Image 1 (cartoon, rainbow, N blue to C red):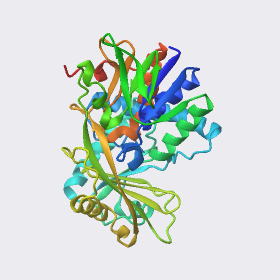
Image 2 (image 1 turned 135 degrees about the vertical axis):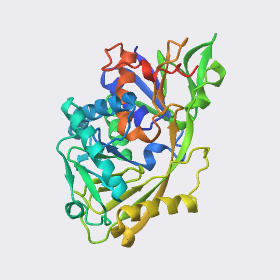
Image 3 (image 1 turned 120 degrees about the vertical axis):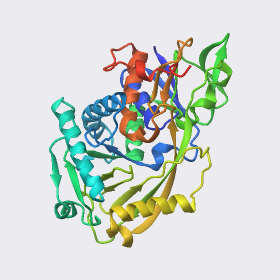
Length: 374
């Protein structure tokens, strides 16, 4: 296919555009710059060894995503100036009390098993005592224990998105700001209407995040993604160098990660049923900070610089929606990543690009197919 339009410039859409344009495809992106785009709100954790998920399809994607980052990040560093924030800093999976301490051995065992199966991005796995953990993360609260996973990495969503768009632009990407509607003739998608123009294409990719379902109504095809609001706090720690502090993860799924030189990100709420209500709430901010202080009480003196809001595109089964829409040979979906968008989105975009190009895809995408809910 020679001409492709990607609707959405979040992490997934930017990845589709980058991989297609790098392969010589003429690509246009259309993005409405709406408030609440999940990519712009968060910071990402890429840790195939630190997940507590028991869903094989999720764990497979996480493993493949880290392997993809091992190629993608060096490429972007060589070709563009935007900083992705990607760095391997390790992760402390923390037990806050004795009950959680008894569960830590399972976390260690699963991480070791995945590493032994050849999963990248895990590295050394070891139990560490509270004192050793606090030496790694000086602001850490009094804890019962932790597992240290040395290969885990962090990433900045805004930086990664910009880097991929810059790289795509170097290969001829045309970016259009505004709303888009599908161009449908005789029941088939032929392109889009955007910026007052009729733009025909050989393929259209819907990567509009939580808003993706708004675009397929006239086709009679439902994209079952719902917005899940996340509120995430960005702090600065005066007189501290946080660059090499590890990621903190918990059984409660709240987390903390740091960036140079003294920026700390603490998140995040997972608010189902929020709709597109773009508001900070007193309860949400309290929840995030309360969880952060329980985990790292030394952050109480930090400056609260910002609290960002993102609407995660959540699918009914928690898995991404990837692939061709049935009955529409020119229409592809790339959405539904929920809270794992920054971890998985770049690799998902690459796989959808491979589908469009007719290349072999590294994994079987049938568990993520768009029609699995109907």
